[in-house]
Image (cartoon, rainbow, N blue to C red; front, side, top):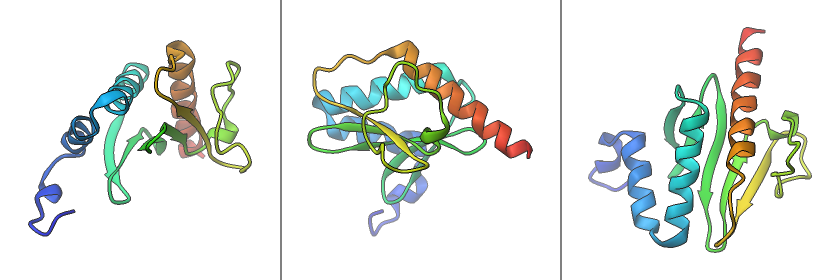
Length: 132
């Protein structure tokens, strides 16, 4: 957040738009594409902006976060260890008992249907846990 409080007045969606534009290049394109796929998989998804500038997608709890680094765009699923991943998308943060992540590198293709299935599974898990 800057000293003028400008970020405080912007919606999370606008802040994410700004991040995508600011990144530009392949990382901006990748984050934008991943965001679109998340929204396709869950039209009720809420976008949040947390932890000093991390895009977060939620529905009955956190689905995933979108972090950007020099060499990767990372989607971290908050409860990824509990999700089925028959296509083997998870390729990062595999050692823990809770999170799982997917690192996307420049030029890599996205398995769109498998990613949308993971998002739907994360939402279903969140809603199941919310009912308990």
